[in-house]
Length: 357
Image 1: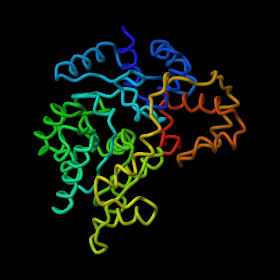
Image 2: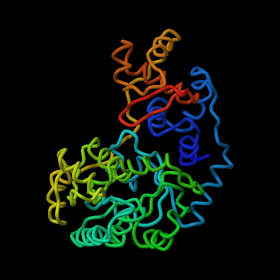
Image 3: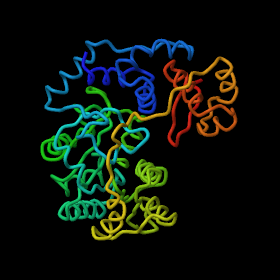
Image 4: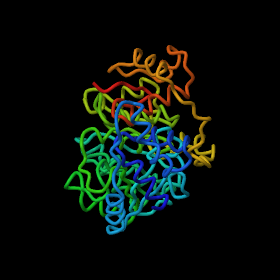
């Protein structure tokens, strides 16, 4: 089996998420070596991995090729450089369209699904103006603001979907999704055939934020997915911007709250691009080797017992586990990796972990 197939098999293994994937490659050097090591690592964590067989991987690759798509692997030239900066960057994306669009200055436009007609018109015009000035507009192909942003920016637009590359959601966006794939760029993290579920959308949102130099929110209710994207953008060191709305409109509460908390108020494309210039000037590049890591350290049973007393079903930062356990970060990460591969550990946003009840 070639290296691409090995990497695809590794990330499709239950319990191997983006963080575990990076740690395994840093420790073992190749996906093939990591696959060989998985049974022993999972046994140390009290479980056993369920490796997908080679035939399943071959079927996925055939399905992707059949629809004119391809896999983009982290560390390859076509993989989006900005996204590669994230600690939890997807090890593989499925793509249809022009991957070169991610090399232009990128800005995410997100907002309410039940957006007002006025805000949809504004989003469409803002996206058009940004594209006309050489930017690429990124969004999530949802109803409302997302759809308006893609329509305004075509062909200079990237759509990140929550399901498989061959799954249309929402159904009424079938024509728009096909047009983005043909003229712009369509990306998916989930395997082909995956129907989008509620848990997939936060994963999609991190990709939207990670692909972009900055995120603009246009209408968003409190605790909405758009605010999750804005928070993730801020955590990644990217610019967060918002369009103000009428204080009497609940759809404007999220944007007005962002501005109150320090997001940049923007009124047009010139405002957006002015905020992005300092970030764009840093000449972002994907790491030469995304698998760089310190020398691995094996954990002892005593180390595992010490960590098991500190970790429960409430998520805590990994840094806090290192501090309270007095173990080295490498040992703590080794134990967490074993537990994740055994299906006992869940990773959360912000570098937090918890045991699965």
